[in-house]
Every structure is written in C-alpha cells, then in structure tokens.
Figure 1 (cartoon, helix red, strand yellow):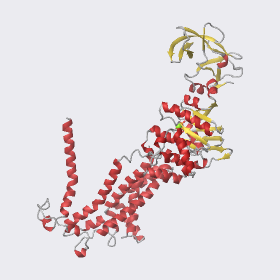
Figure 2 (spheres, rainbow over the protein chains, first blue to last red; figure 1 turned 90 degrees about the vertical axis):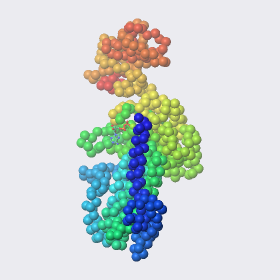
Figure 3 (cartoon, each protein chain N blue to C red; figure 1 turned 135 degrees about the horizontal axis):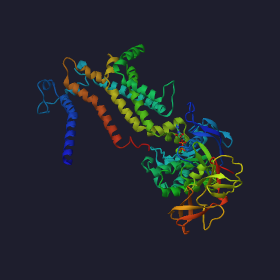
Figure 4 (cartoon, chains in turn orange, cyan; figure 1 turned 120 degrees about the vertical axis):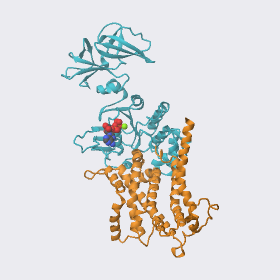
Length: 282
Length: 358
Ligand SMILES: Nc1ncnc2c1ncn2[C@@H]1O[C@H](COP(=O)(O)OP(=O)(O)O)[C@@H](O)[C@H]1O
Ligand SMILES: [Mg+2]
C-alpha cells in the first residue's frame, strides 16, 4: 500500500513538473529558432531538429529601425515603476497597518476592521471600474503617459496588498513587545522602528514579494495609461504580436520578463524555508 | 525609587458603554518605597490592569497616580521609569541576549561602561553568562523568560519593579531558586517590588505584604500571618491556606457566645452588635484540636476519613451536617468513629455577611 501510494505521489509530482516546466522549455527552444524552424512544422531538439541562432535574443537590444524589438527600455521602465511603486506601498502600507493593528479608530460606525476592509475592497473591484477614473485624473494632472503617473496608480493597486498582509502580521505580533519597549524607555516611534520593525522583516518580505509580482505582471493599467512616451514590458511584449509575429524574439522577451520573478521567488523561498516567517518573535 | 500612591483609581475598559462595569473598582493604595509586595487573586480579578495602570500602559478612567507626591497620571510609560515583566516571555528576537539585557539602559543613554557592568551583574545573577552572545530568538522558553526578568532588573534606579506572574513558564526547580534571587536583588537595591501571582505559596514566601484581590476589589492588605490568622472576608479565608478555612453557619447567643447547631462556642469577639446579618464562624484547620473528653468549646463529630499528607494528617469529620477539616500531627492517633473537637476561642473569627467582625 505504502509503495503504491509513494509511486502515485511521484507520478503526480512528475506530471505537475512537466506541466509547469514544458512551457518554459518550449519558450527557451523557440527563442533560439529562426523563421524557417518555426514555420515548417514542430521542431524540438536543437542541432538535430533545427540549427539554433541568437537572432531572437539579439533583436531585444536593437531598435525597430534596425529590425529589432527594443525591449531594454520597457524592461527598465518596468523595473523602475514596480520597484518604486512597491517600495512606497510597503512603506505606507506598513505604517498604516501598524496603526490599524495597534490603535483604535472610530468614525461614526466605522472601526479598524472596516478601514482594513476598505483597503482590500480596492482589489475586489474589477480593474475596469478604476480605469476611467484613473485616466481622467491622470489627464487632469498631465500625468498620462509618464512614469510618475504609473507609479501613483501602482501605489493605489499595491498598497492594499501591503496593508492586508501587514495588518495580519502585526496582529500576530504580541502587543507586549511594544509595551516592553515603552517600559524599557522607547517613545512610541522608537518602539516601532527599533523593536517592532526589525521583527517584521519576514512580513515585509512577503508583502514586498506580492507587491512586486502584482506590479510586474500588470498589463491592463499600463496599457491604458501610456501611449508613446513610456512603455512597460508587458505592453511592449504584447505589441510584438503583430501581423508577422517574431516568435523567436517574443519568446526571448517573455523569458526576460519572467526572469526577475523567478529570482524573487527563489530568494523568498530560501528566506521562508529558513523558518524566518514563523517564530520570529515568540 | 519612590513611594507610589494610587488615589481613587478606577478603571473600566469600556467607559462609554451603557452597562459600564469596572475592571477595577475605585480604591486607594500606597506602596511604600522599598517594599516587597505580592498581589494575589483569581484570574480576571484585575491584577494585570492594576500593574498596567502603574506602568502607564493603561490610562486609568478615574483617579490619580502619584510618585513621591508628584502626579504622574498623564506621563508616558517611558517617562515613569518603571520596570515591568510580563507573564509570558517578551524578547527582542533580532537582538542578542546581551543586547536584550542592555536595551533598557541603551534607550536611556547610560554610559557604555555602566551598561557593560550592569549587564554582567544581571547575567551573573540569572546564570545567563554563557548565553550573552547568542541570538535571543534561539533560546528555550525558560531562558527567554530569564531575559525578560533580566531586562526588568538591569536598571536599579527604577520607581518600582512590577512582575506579572513572571515564573509561570519556569519549571519548579528553577522557580524556587529565582524566587530567592529576586528577594536578594530586592534587598540589595531596596527597589519597590510588586509581584503578581495566583499561587498563595509563592506570595506567602516571597512578600512582606500581600494584597488580596477579588472581582476588581482589594479585599485585604496584610502580612502573610495576618491573612492566615484573621482573614478580613470569607473569600480570603477560602482563598488563602490549604485546606481552606472551615466555616460554620451559626447564631449569636449572647455576649461572646455563639451556637453552631447544638454546640455552644465561646469566641474572642463581642457579638452583641452584629444585628441580624447571617453569621459564620471561621477557623483554620490548623487550630482545631482533638481532645479526649467533652469540655468547653467542643463538639462531637463523626470521622469521615483520615488522609496521610506526609508531614501531617488531614481529618475530615462531620458535625450535624457541618464538614470540618482538621490538621493533626502525624503521630497523633485519630479515633476511628467519633472525635471531640475543640475550637480555641482566640482562633475563632466571626463573619457577619462574610465580613470579619472585629
Ligand atoms: N484590553 C482589555 N479590554 C477589555 N477588557 C479587558 C482587557 N484587559 C482585561 N480586561 C478585563 O478586565 C478584567 C481584569 O483583567 P486582568 O487585569 O487582566 O485580570 P488578571 O490579571 O487578574 O487576570 C477581566 O474581566 C478582563 O476580562
Ligand atoms: Mg493577568
């Protein structure tokens, strides 16, 4: 029975791995193909089925005028917008979450829980509801088609995630730790940044990871709120899908766009598996 | 170091609610500078609330707090210069043991040499020297609580050290040693020490004065001997001592006399003014004597069982429906069936409506 069960388990894991890895392998192999090897039926193994070429990758650097797809600038735009949006969201979100976790707010019938839910509710709405208001507001402030405009929008999108995760995290941090810091001679601000904050790194890492993933993969808002001056990576990649799609460059660009997330996932995974998330305090 | 005075302090956690109830009823209390106190009471009676009011974590809804006559009610926790240790370990997980112990001093800008010396001293007292360089998050619960204690003791100029059931998570062996150590430290620095516990033995062996609390009220303040011999209410009689005090429903029968059923008992209390309140006679099982023959202040009871408690025997006897516990020395022979019990007048406490008649 045990043997059968183990076999079944490994079979399932193997199937799942194939399911996850296959698209990557396919994209990797496609990125080294040329027009011939893509259009003349399916080819699989380099040097056997097709002759690998670096053209797809070289095109990423070249401007459209040189026959390239110029993915470098959108890539760094995306890095900048995601990093700035995530950083500001984490900063504001952590402070807001600490306040929501530790102080009691009252405004009519509204309590802390309602305020927290208000933040989260921003993510429950379908994005399309927000698109027009964002468009009009950014237009009013001449922030359409700018990095700053995108960062502002990303803060609106990402801060709820940060607040949500951090409220939950701070609620699990015993109040006694703040109180002890006060007794030991800190004022409330010192108690926060000397004691509570260093202990909250695991929560911040997780919140940061989610912010970066949601920011990095957003297509909808960057598509609607930018035109010519500023382009983010997801939009640039989709733009490649024209009448004659350069599948090789598209695959290379897609791999480039996934790479940062893979790196982040590995770092966070290492961090979490060290047991840093639980037991940081007790 | 200061005399701490609580003036008409009261606290409610929901003062706006229509059915507001006090977690702590209005009371007055003075903690003498350098005293060693224990607060004793069942869970939920307001012990932690009282400590938190003194340290400033909780703002009392009513009343004033004075340190050496100076009103500190509105001062923040850090300005009050109080040390407090909680029931469960609180450690700064990102710091080493040494940094944990030094934190209260670092926060208050002590000189480095002073900090090092104090940390060393506290680490020695609590046998933490070997752990100083370790990360505090990698310790056992016992060790973490020692660090919490250490942070409470590292400053010797505090107005008071408040300890909220600090030895709950510590195992009995170590508990015993730590209790002695705390006593020594208190005697060395003469800082006021207020120690919350629900363990009467801990309170009795540790404190000069015990504050017994029940349901948000201070019921009695006194030395261990006073609490044992003259409990002010039947609650204190039940709560302190093992077994609990014996209580008999009774009627006043003139002068210092009262009757428990058919038995006439002479007490040391003048009962002419007690009126119609229900009366109870309270006496410790330690003070009831087994005698040979009927005499003054005796009644005849049926022995129900005799338990060997090691260093003494606990006799349970019934007299006209009143269950009576008697502690007798191990080598005294207890009659199998009927036994004559004598209640010495000077050990009889009389309660009218559960309050000691004096
Ligand atoms: N933060 C709080 N909010 C509301 N009620 C509380 C709070 N803390 C304590 N209480 C209530 O106040 C009473 C006294 O609690 P506490 O001082 O913690 O008692 P103890 O320490 O003696 O067990 C209890 O009835 C408890 O339920
Ligand atoms: Mg308590």
